Length: 123
Image 1 (cartoon, rainbow, N blue to C red):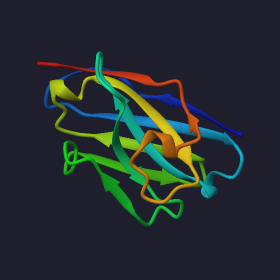
Image 2: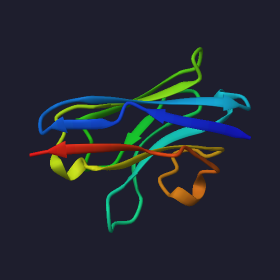
Image 3: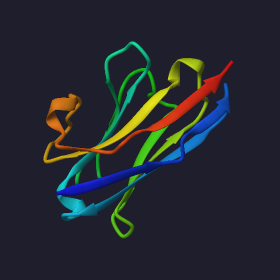
Image 4: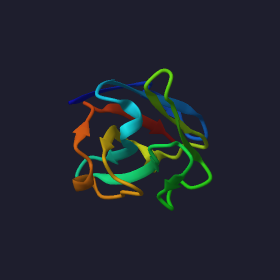
């Protein structure tokens, strides 16, 4: 089992920045590919960013490429999502996910999920 706890969400003006954190506990953190997904009201959950188990490779949804950066710190068992140049359309609940997956962009590929953290971007 892996437990994931997100933090760092909040209210920010358009153009601002936030950094989300996801602390993992339980089984070996380095065994899992990690990802961030988000879900806006009335919409399906969508992939945002992912990072390989080794941390050597990252991949992003086109909508956030160049603005968001995913990273992981194995010493702290934590994955981060640095979000810059935020837009109102980035408003959503952001979820951290872990899975034995490589380059997974579908939510069904991930086995463990955090409870989510709200990000609200005002115009």
